[in-house]
Length: 319
Image (cartoon, rainbow, N blue to C red):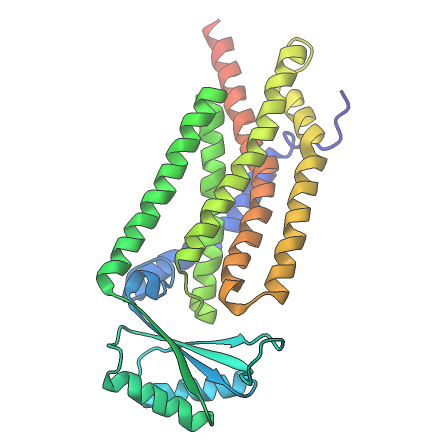
């Protein structure tokens, strides 16, 4: 068995790299929890806090400078913390609209004075602006969605632990779960930083992206662990566990990279050519799959190797 990439030899370097990847995000989440009125580690959208989204059809392309001007006018008009997005209309659609201006704000009643105020401000900035959609999420429903999202994540983790423990053994399952925690914290940390500097908010689609990332990440890890288990049957008497781990990683390395790369190509196309409404979802997928590929190869495998070394030391001491 030829070994090309020596992961085990440099395992503490990779663990230090993982710490460097996670630390800025953890600091950002702690800071956000302290400073945000919602006391959440990320800036949450109306899906979780409750609020209203108004969409206006605009007959011209909206520049970033114009968007900032509209935001200032809304704030001066008494609208607190409006979140604005530009949704470009497909030129092939049979309509004279060029853009959709999406405005998110706190929960307001449909047809209320506040809604009329927003409409008047937008109409002054854009001639012929037309209110095309109003959607609201009440505060109670927002809390319920947040609880359901946490339950979904928890059930996914419990199911993965049970499956990996049954398929392999508990220390393998534990390292895979720590890998999932590693990937999840990284994605959450990046979005926490984006929330602080670019006002990026998370919604129910973000949780969907996290669940997809968890499934993709554990899939890569299982492939590596399955190859380790197979190699242990044939080479356990000839090679140390670290050598078997290195060989197994090298045997699955090309497959893992190729699978992730083809997925990332598709996601990058969606990010740059897709709509604004799915951009944050796709970004979470890109970040998660990238770090998931890294953790499967360089993080989870090194944890298993460290634990196996400790087992060997205990066995020698007891003998």
